[in-house]
Length: 594
Image: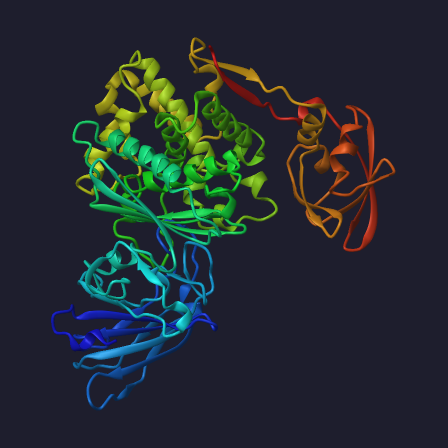
């Protein structure tokens, strides 16, 4: 397949072959009709929007060659400028660049190929033509030649130009950024479809071993999507896209999602998908619906409403913003709230989810050191590169950002006597920064908050910023709930649960040993001198294993001397510590008042 021969196609054309299913290699041909005569530069993105980590996708390029187009097919020498940056020699004729790319990343962020399925984000396969990224481009997707792929189809929301009944063929993108914003999946799918407010939606699922329960999935997703459209557009009820696609890869173990303008790539466990004649864990299914809700909400907040720092994305370097608490945190608040509003969960379940997030934040000592603004700014090097000290040094802009959204919602409702809410702020943000695609400045919420609520709310908002966004104070939502509707109590916990909190240690099973993974500031484990990597042997003379951990903890008491025997670097050590009441962080539970 060679798009270069079609004069109707754009001057920049990509062709992708799933060339080696067993070796996990794509071949990619880039045709450049009008290369820069001074020496065309080519560059592979270093990261993908929505996942704030330098990933250096160029490391998977196994070979790269360049040729003059035509009968001569003359090879060209590529100058290597950087690990992800090349330059062609001075030439005024059309050229083609052929790359072979290894693809075996099963996440939603990169590219994957085997005999069962193919998936890619163009940021992992397609070189940017530097200086011509604004131009339209074509993507040709070739079918695998292997007989085992005869039933494969293509699933994507790229604009189809000329494709066969299975979806292989030519697609068009408005520019390079548009190309990167449409993931592509190939293989065999179970597909469900529905209309939300007249807009076509679909979910294409790979990996389930049984027939999915299409009726339940359709009903639930329809309700969630409709509720979200109506949140942003309560009057027109119009979505900002013509169609939307959920691409789902169901695996044994995995979870995550990545947002795009009118699609999302999701990774989940098979047991999270409702399947016919298979018992379903409702909690796991709720988590999957929450993931769908989260990524769908991003079609407004992140993909259209963006930080000004992301306009445009600069994919060769880190793009810093202090606003991820807004873009990810507020989305995390709304993902479960939309499940409740769309009647997928009841109020009791919703409040339990809110409390679980709140308690998780309170268990993290990092909340006392890092602000939400700094957590956002440092996402590239701290949140996305977690280590054994992360719980002590980092606060999640997802979790605490969601709690901030809840607190702000409660304060807006209180101030306006329930005439306004965070919903009104989200709609104002959408009208000012989503429809015109004008990015939000780092201090952009100040103007919007004043426009929505007037000067009378300024003191409350300024306190929010100084204490909870740029400061490290705990967000006291327990003081802000209306007791007529929601009751806040100290969480009732078992003795073992309380001792775990006092101990302040996280662990993993290492071949029958209990291996320390994290030691939290202020806990008994840190006071004893335990460190990540230690293998616990005994407590007060009793052998410790992962299976016996809770039983032995349950036998301990406060102020009792605890003797711990452990191994570090294969050397035996012994230490002593005590459990103290103040070592356990406060935990809460929320309940409907009636």
